[in-house]
Image (cartoon, rainbow, N blue to C red):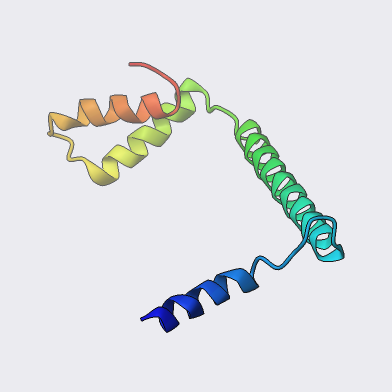
Amino acid sequence: MTNTNARCGRRLNLSNNIQPGSIDMQIDMQNAKLTWTFLCLLAAAALLGSVESAAAKSKPTYDQAWALCTKQLNKTVPRDSSARYSAGAACMMKYGYRI
């Protein structure tokens, strides 16, 4: 039983052999800085990409939105359905207009 504990302790100590101020520690710190820099740049690029794509989309006019919603409703909701009004209002709301 004590052999098992000694083996586990030895494995843990092998990963912590870096002494403060050693070359290995300096390399590890440089790798950590590079990793964080890369992650920050990646996050900034993703954020800017999503902002540009959202700004590139233009809002359709009321008549264009009405035509799009009517076309969609004709495919999905029967004409004599009472749900047609609610579905149409929800579709127009998606484009930023209220009925």
